[in-house]
Length: 395
Image (cartoon, rainbow, N blue to C red; front, side, top):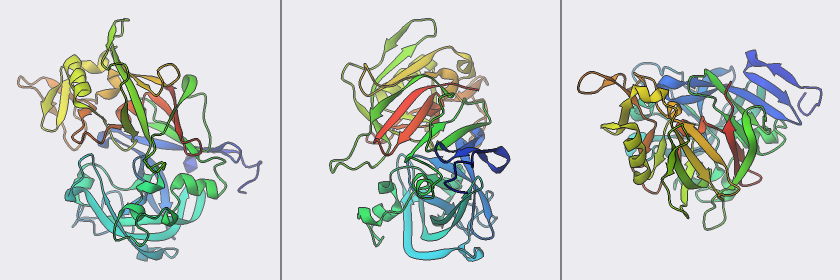
């Protein structure tokens, strides 16, 4: 019934919130807060193998772990794994896969494998020939909760384009469709755009909508900021200009932390749990919140979670660009999380809570992850080469 205007359904039990050809398709994304990730349920292969995969706007491959991944060997991989030999519909493409993850890439976060074509189903909607990468997931990725990824970034972020051993290395003509492109090509999505609403930190789920915009999930009007393109004029990531950061104490008093003319390129990354900011901005946040470094992370008194203080981030033109307020309660995680670190206390035994803001260890890579995106309704507009944002409206 693809393409039929009569097929407008609500089927949450199948993982689909709604589907109308002229509107697009909306899926629930579950909030796995202990592992700091947002997951979309899919099945892959014939017979179908179920997976819950991280939605990732900073990569572009549909990536699954191999059964013998070193990150979970000798045990079975806890979220399941993908063996092309177990699928009657899989087809080897003869192309290697190689990608390095993390703000500071290293061999420890490298995944290597190969590309296949196979059937994929998302919320009851079928994609018969999706290009799927399958790779060895090393311990560092599993420990970080990365157990499979749906890349929603630019095709120029695919391993096919970036890996020198790929037969189409550096050639735009060799890029394969991402999920947002496949849903468009299959007729499920009327436009090459998707909208992300993560909902508040304590919520069990948010939504991702392909092809449409839900105006019940934000306040005011959506405002646009253009994507920053590379010197060749190509869109290579969801990179936009952060032009202001201000602090408010929740009672009308505040201060700006950036000077006029500030322009920092930041990447919107749904798979990153934190904001990774320039050092001077992180230091301002740390001073206000009383952050205490613990190794590579920072912790604050858990009372900060109940604060009425906010950060206000502005993008693009000051007069017309989006302005998003981020409550401190959305950037500080509950005591004992994330799960791979556990409980942290100060020298006298008082509880400390994980701060979702870090100084970027790589000054060339600044990210706004879930600790920011939860406060915004974000439209990732491929056709318009722009991002649209408004203040998120929580359930």
